[in-house]
Length: 181
Image (tube, rainbow, N blue to C red; front, side, top):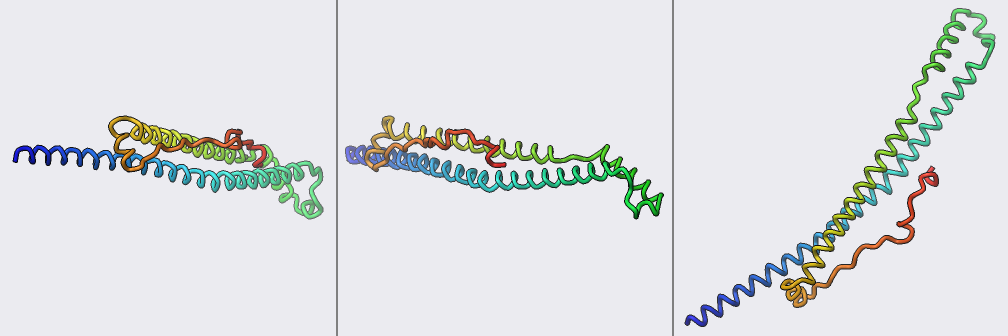
């Protein structure tokens, strides 16, 4: 009777050990899939965000350039047009307005570039953090698959080490922002 209780207790402990180890390995494997999914979300964000920010920045820069070109052209006109000559007060007002706009143009293209740089940097930092998290997750999982006693459970249930994520040659090249403009 005592032998059967001892055997039952040992079997129960072994069963708990197997269940706990199996669940831990599955949790770590799921952590890797979660990290990959999070990275994919960041890659999608970068793919959607950066080209759109560049387009907005280019459009605003072109708009600002056109405005400054028009202001310069208006300023270089030495004589008011015939319509302005008829109304000296309007001509004087227009001249003062053009001088003020030329002297104090509110240029904002630099803000667009700053926003672009900030957003780009933020996305790249998030991707970098995501990659570090993925690497840590793979390390934890592979350690559990290889280290005793969880390696026994991994072998029993077919858990294999996870392959590391490697950058392609194209990914190792730095992004040339000039090509995007």
